Image 1 (cartoon, rainbow, N blue to C red):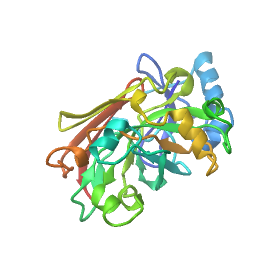
Image 2 (image 1 turned 135 degrees about the vertical axis):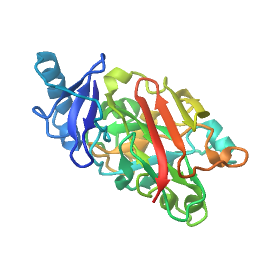
Image 3 (image 1 turned 90 degrees about the vertical axis):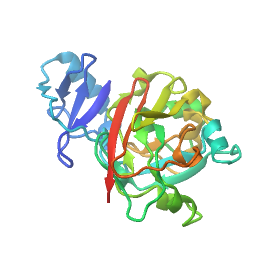
Image 4 (image 1 turned 45 degrees about the vertical axis):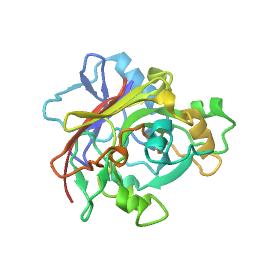
Length: 283
């Protein structure tokens, strides 16, 4: 299933997107798409309601699409997880996942405006496959156990400010946690529909120019390894989001480092997970 949340910011209602593009209102079945929904069998209830028929159809014209998961408890990120991206930044292939955290308050809808921070001169783009956790996970015993706790997948835009990230601190958080720096969506696609997460193409364009064109098979650490690895160091809760890294083509690694400016438009997408579009403004 493709689950989403639609409506004005702070007033989103849960919905499901059908294969023919119709949006069915789930608000009579579930209150929201969040950790409580995932851990309580919400996906099953939503699927049963769709199969039973009778859910009202939403008029999608002019309807805002919000992040498909209500504010997550945490966003865990993996850096330098594509071989070509590590190479373009001059970093060695890491022996284990490079982990950092991102403020959950950065999450916005897939078409919302993204704000370039005040004083920023190095705001950058990163298309990423994000994992949404569906069950509490701690000390998972390998990849098979990891797959059991994944609710689904979503397109994530891990916007980054490179000066804040790399020059202001030995930690990356300052350059990752600025407001609006994590557009998410448009849909949460359940794991059973996605199939193999290491068989997805992902891409990003800036002002119509293709900048990133990668594939999840090129990850250094695959999704199930990342989830199992993280569970050794932190408890993963339902609704948590894991950004799994970005392929080559970020501004930091391009000739002339063409960082983003107000008025720039970024489009990005992943096979089967939909696409996003944001115009950048000033904070």
